[in-house]
Length: 325
Image (cartoon, rainbow, N blue to C red; front, side):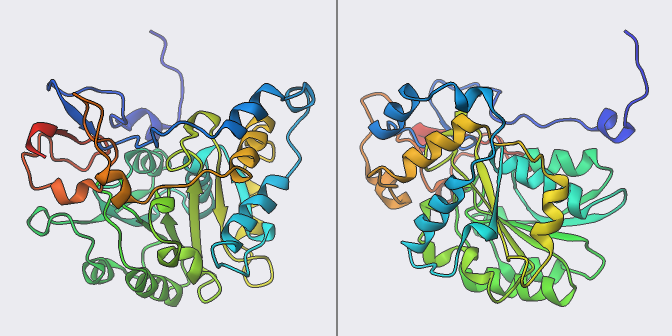
């Protein structure tokens, strides 16, 4: 095999298993990809049937969907939010990778938590940057303890990231804890990313979106993949301060692909937001009885992390034998 010059950090990076491997068990609970299994609203399927060739032939310029997303949050009480606070991406991972390009170069340091979304760690490593983490304790049921994270924060870190809810534990950190971390990051003049890929499963009052008017350094990433159940369209977005209080979004546009988030995804995303679909919260999901012989779907699995853990590692794919749950 020919081996040509490549970025050595990419060549040496060993990718983690992200939702592809199986577990040696007859019955498993997947705590990885976490897509809402509920059927899509009929409005989405109708919109798919009615897509015309313009959405396929032309580059995607229409940002009407951003107005729909902003309205979605204004209807939930975040009255200040507008399309000017957002930018679209090919899923929230695309947004996270662009934020890495924006903030990191060789030798730069990121502070996160463990366990955490491993595809993000892989990208940090491919840039030649260093991912450091606060390890959540098995003895404390993997609860996120803000004080322990704060104790590891230093001015020598170049970027901070927290997942809320956490992937894969599903546990939610209180907004007051995220507030403390945002304040510390702001004192260092550094960005705090709050990855809220599963944020639609928690009350909007707990979202870090609420912190943006106070902390312009806060960047929230969200997606249509999880609670909306639309992972196949690859549609995510960033929410942060507008150009009036921070230049983060202005600089972000320089590194993000200007034609990402394809036209079909934008149409289907708007159809979902215009539908009467209701996103169940985690307690509702856990209360649902499964079909006979099937595990009970997406849970707040953090409460089960001390029960017969099959594989414990700082990886995204965690499996449990559900007969013990």
